[in-house]
Image (cartoon, rainbow, N blue to C red; front, side, top):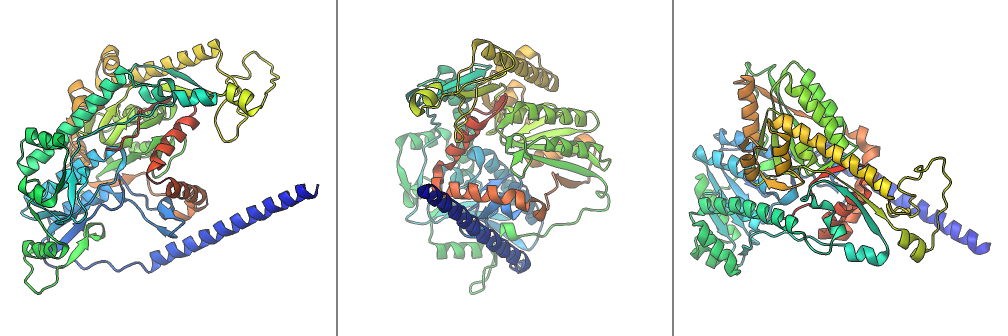
Length: 600
């Protein structure tokens, strides 16, 4: 008994200490953030011949949250917010007409964004291309060496430079899929899968030990499609034939800066101090004068809308993240439907642009949002703009729009649904030694079994044949509904949608050819199309959903933010894999989701 009380006391003390530590972290974090809000750095001065620097050293999302807790790091007690693509594009457009800005300096090593980042890079490339059309320069430089993605962005520059000791590795693209069937068999866990479509391969790693031919075909098709666009962009930017570029990739060499210069992949080698001199010369700064360099994210000169634009708005509604039950800065829930309804009922909003950057998720939530998109499209122009990914549920919520705009490298389609459950009868009973007894009022009152392991969503028994048949029927009905939604929205027959559906993932370029996308382009193109459709020549942009007030989300967000940061710090580059598998393991209901989270 003494030992029992000893352990209980130790546990209580441990809990108290942990809570005490997190309380200190909590209030220290608040103090730090409050201090940063009240005594933040002064706005930089934009003088004549200013050069704006774009580093992209933080992740880039479609729209960055204004809530510091969404990016709070409990280890450094500071907020490290991601960059908002919408803000970056706006600043580049504004700088193009600002006579004080001489050029833009791309100080790049890598580009961090979700699902391969290629559509994000395409939008930045287009904006920088328009910036150059005004006669201003864009220079690119890397001190550590360009990643393949960073190089794809950098080639839009007038001139590319690298540190003499830096390097570049061009490898093309690949996708690696891990299979868990044998592992599950060893631990006594059986996957229970119901799905529609031979390409709905999100559950394949749990069922097979090898890749199916259908999935291999799918992966090969969209990887080659994406590489064609990347290679084409590099070819156009550097004046190098695609065939020669592919030959360099197949030779597989880590090219030094000198070799890259000889191959015309960059213009010259340069040290940091030499790069500053080159920027001064390009900006027209006299020798001996200081170069005024300002980070692009700190540049905030925006023109006020003209009088004609006031009262005429285009609502840009951001749908970014997994589709589930809760709405957040980087998650999509049923609350997004209310946001779309708000824009529909606002007489000042003349058109809507739905910006989608989502791999999908809950089929039921997707349908709730689809309904509001369809209603909005009945009263005013609605244009869907697709980011890095708008697949499965992400395509579901976009298909009712009057027009769909996607980048050539966008991942989209994946029209299909699945349900995934895990039963661990052997694990629970034979290896752990837990036995469950059931008392029930009806034959199927214990549908799916119980979940005796608090740390794992594994049921105590397998599905019965009848239960499986019921679930398969439900999945089939959900897929039929998905086909109907796309058929109505795209003006295609159900048979035609099914032919390009069955869970298959397409690039934006292929999706346009198949009728799933109307035109290729980015968010700016979608806004212009919405304005043209609404007959607007002048307008304001209204970004939605409205940011949640900081204090309102404080208590709700802090514990989850701390937990996520701790796990991310421990797992490092393996964190995305952990997150994807956790989402699949904890998924409930029928899902309409992209098979994989890609990193290119």
